[in-house]
Image (cartoon, rainbow, N blue to C red; front, top):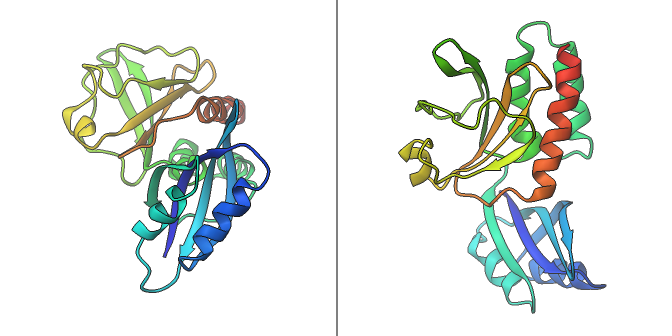
Length: 216
C-alpha cells in the first residue's frame, strides 16, 4: 500500500538521503518526491512511499522522526497517479472534455493538488451555491460564504462561523481560488490536514487562472 508522507526536514545536504535510508530500514520505498516549500533552513516535501506487505504505517512516522530535525506533518493513504505533469494533464483534460468541463476540473483537482475533495461554487440571487463537486465532497453545504466574491487564492479559516460543524469535526483544511473573473470559485478540502502551505495556495491560484482561460 502507498502513503503520502509530508515531512519537514533540515534544508542541508544529506537530509533527504538520511530520510530515504531510514524509510528503507522499515521496508519502505520512495516512489515520488515533490518539494512543497522551502524556508530559512528547512524544506517541506511530499513523499509517496510504498510499504512492504505486513509493514505498519506507524513505522514510517517512527523512522522519520527518529532523525534529528525531521518532523512528519501528516501521513495519508495514497491511491493517486504518479506523474510529474499533473497540472498540464488536468488542463488538457478540461480543455478537451466533451461534457461538463467544470465537473472534469473538480474530478481531477484532488489528484493534482493532493486534497480530499473539491467543488466549484458561484453566487446566485439566493447567495452562494455549489455548481459541481468531486467524489467525496461533503453533502453538507455551507449556508453562507461571507468571503465571496473572491479576488485572489487564499487558505480559509476552517474554524470560522460559516464552516459547517461536520467539516470542523473532521479537521478539514480549506483553500479557494477564483476562476478568473467568472465569479466562480474552486474550493479545496483536505480532511484531517495538513494545513495548506503558501506555495500550495499559490499553485492553486496559478492552476485556477489557467483553467479560467481555457473555459473562456
